[in-house]
Image (cartoon, rainbow, N blue to C red):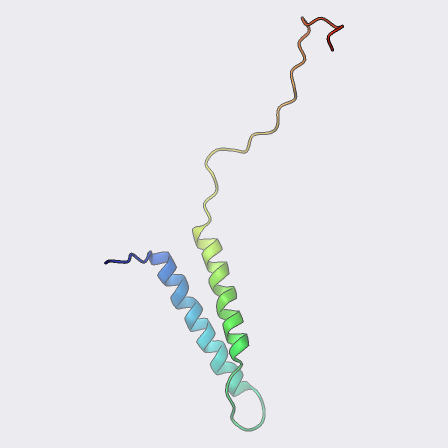
Length: 84
């Protein structure tokens, strides 16, 4: 079975992983004190945020038809006024 992965989806996934890895490495080296692990929750949050924004910006396609405004109801002038 062949699973197709669209190039935009692969790009977004790779960029999100790289951002998450960079955030994880930076947070482990940035605090003062003994060496420790990075902020895993911050790295996951950064990767998720970047992936979501890239997905929205790269896959958004505005519709080609303009939005139609609601039309006012037409009142017939030939109808019997007593019926209204």
